[in-house]
Length: 557
Image (cartoon, rainbow, N blue to C red; front, side):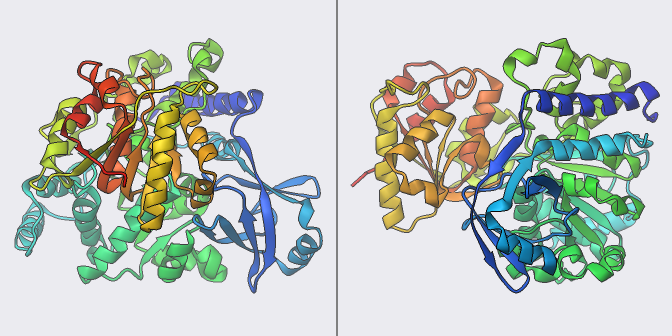
């Protein structure tokens, strides 16, 4: 495959600048994060925040009316506690004393433009980018067959599809492992692939679009690698960890936090570097390291333009994910999608699954209408059995969403329904007052029973209505729009669909269908649909209507 032409190289730089200008012109991507407390500890300070931080990569401080990045002030992030909404920072002593004496002068912001500047910086250097030309060379065909036989001899061996996915990873320079939640993408296929590289002493990278997605995979992998007898001392998680990760896997945390003096040596000694795509791009020293393979988790949610820098290494790329869920977030408003002025910015809405298409379309990539969200040409290997869902739910998901022969285990997934007659809120559009009241009753029961649960809805206004009815839920951080729940999992999901809406709940629209699919995939044990059964079943061939047909009544009291 040919390297990028100058025209397409310019395209990436111009697209990044175009998106930056759009955010700036429309005052988007800049969000104040209110600080309600500042306390001193032995390492620095701990900030108590009013709300959760969506991204840890784009934080900006304002102190005495001047804005700085953390690096500019010499501040090192120690951890972020999502549950308590606290951010711990290591701060040089003179600055710490000044902040403690002038607490009201410190302000915190999240600025998406900061991340776009990283892209502008990278593409302005005119890097040589191309698809990887050679498949992995780690294993000969004979060695690969021996590895496959070893896996087959395990007490709980991978299934045939998982074994084939493992084989694809070690024989293809670029491939996509596609699987629903519970299909073994991470806990089987990725696990054994990484174990093979680590045992051979070869460095690889595991990248993800968000901190939540990264740690969710990494925690599973760290636990499972130890069970396989593989040392995890050579694994580094770059970037700011959660409090849970920093407490349980301190030896794997970013050496910039714990051991700055030996940072570069520790990087060179590491065999698995795990980071978000934004962190990887920001750390220019990583470009000097030799990698044998790149693995991108949650590839369907990973922006293409942030994955393309990996093509400067000319090393095998394996993407893992489920493209029948959410696509990358694009800040363009509906009216601006057809505005020629912002045409280049639309590339930010395309996922890493379009890597192959990007290089093959060449100049046609400038006409983004040639690309369709579900029509990519990357070699795809499917995992069509899920250990997360019972066959009752798997069959419905296969009919409406996956269409790939998806099947689940014999025991049925627990799907319940609480009848709530359809009634729109008179003041708020896209809000259902009866559903909100019923949800609050359920939530109170779940809180009393100390259950792990989340309330999901496609609509921002329904979330607002639920929180206004039961403000105590705000402190629990358990009420989400479906989009904002990405990357999180709970034992129980309470779903409030509100009403039929083409963009957010109508399964005739693929993007709305995929959004509903995300809601179901957040549940580890049970799904409770809170809605008007008769309203939804009056619409023919709707996904929610089909779910309600197999849902059992749920007793509120």
